[in-house]
Amino acid sequence: MALLLVLTWSSPASGAPASRFNDPQPHRGGAEYRVTYGGRTFACSSGFAVRKVVSGKRGMATAGHCAPTGTDATSGEFRFGTFFESYNTETMDAAMISGTRIKPQVYATTLWTDGGTPSTPVARRVLEKVDGPVRGQKVCVSGKVTKLVCDIEVYNLTGGESCGDEEPIVCTRGLVLAGKEGVDIVDEGDSGAPVFVPVDKEVDGHMVFGARLVGMLIGGGPRRQGGPEDLVTFHTVRQVECALTVEVLTTADTQARGTAPRSPRADCPISD
Image 1 (spheres, helix red, strand yellow):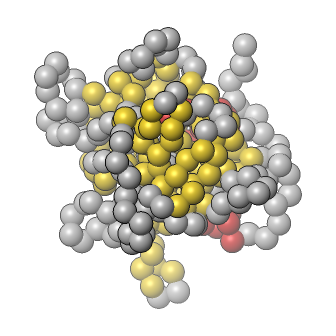
Image 2 (cartoon, rainbow, N blue to C red):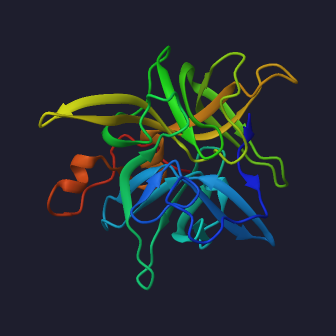
């Protein structure tokens, strides 16, 4: 599987309405952001809101191969934040974008989900999260290029691999492998997008369009040479929380009072 960041040159016009491509604060998952480093500009997708378990610092999770630590990110005419930390190794491909003391940013527990059928909502609130999916489960991906794609079946929980195409080539292994045979479900620029299951609930007499997060998109590719991009690989929620020492946030977490320090997960693999 290949990584899914895209080289880009153009920029949205000033004054454009809020959308995936022009995402104001509080920033949502599934939005396009752009970064410039090494003399080139790339675009990727935001994932979901997270919080450092010790310091309480909040930010947005995304794929680590999208940019190195210290890189500034923008979404359309809006500042999106700075890569607070970024990892692209054989075991993790994850990063956290956050605001700075001088330029603070706010990140929402909401995902852009436009691009599906006419009846689907343009956004969903993160109501739940789980450590990861189960084999055979159907999930959705919502990235900046292919937008909302659902009914993607989970094939293998640890057999996915995603490799870069520039030296030094890094292949991240231990990813979830999923697909939707014969259908283009992913494209360059979708890296970092949220992977979730729709969860609709009635709250105080009103229907809330929600999401249960299961992971974060890393790469994709065809199952047959020359075929459609019908396979994806992604990190689980647990892997993201372990890699970044963060807590993936739900709407209930953001509404709770207090930000008392928490302990890191006790079930994370020990790094060498």
